[in-house]
Picture 1 (spheres, rainbow, N blue to C red):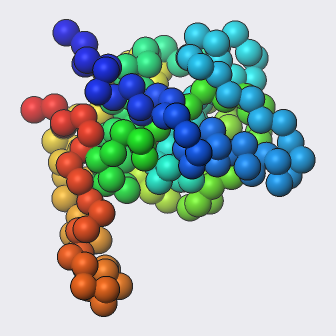
Picture 2 (cartoon, rainbow, N blue to C red):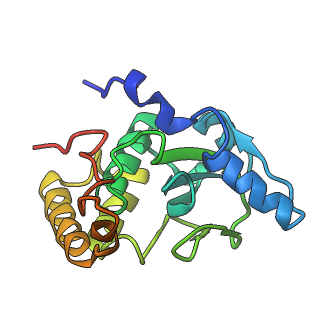
Picture 3 (cartoon, rainbow, N blue to C red):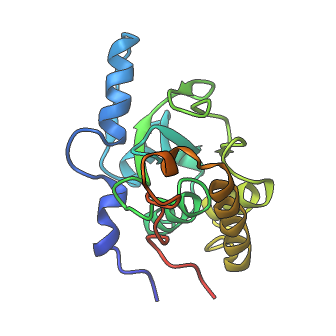
Length: 193
């Protein structure tokens, strides 16, 4: 049985400014480049330069890219995957913050963003600054249709590690009278058992 997409529809293509398409459109304008986004994975697959871009932090941190023609999973799997990647990195738990976008970028180009942005490789690229090697391997396998989802135990272990790191490093939040976890929420799509 598949995941009901209705509550997570915003993860695919949220409306309004500040989301991946608008952020990257802004950067393209700054650099004098054309920006093209697609409404679906199927549309992106029809373009030889169509790619998927999974990102967190309102599209500013690229977590994963892949040429669309290599993608062997469905959009539902991509929505779950970006929730999983967000759950072990940004931890927003918000389907408007962790998003899936379908865009045009040639192989070998970069996608502007924090933490070094992203790269469009001739394969699945995952952000080595935000994701562990195990998470990156399983994310690639999900995109290529070799697994349905990242292992739940791995997700829990990685999330616990990141929570401990954030708890230790967040002194600024305390200075403003905020709890250390003021911006952390449960995953948008719950982890599997």
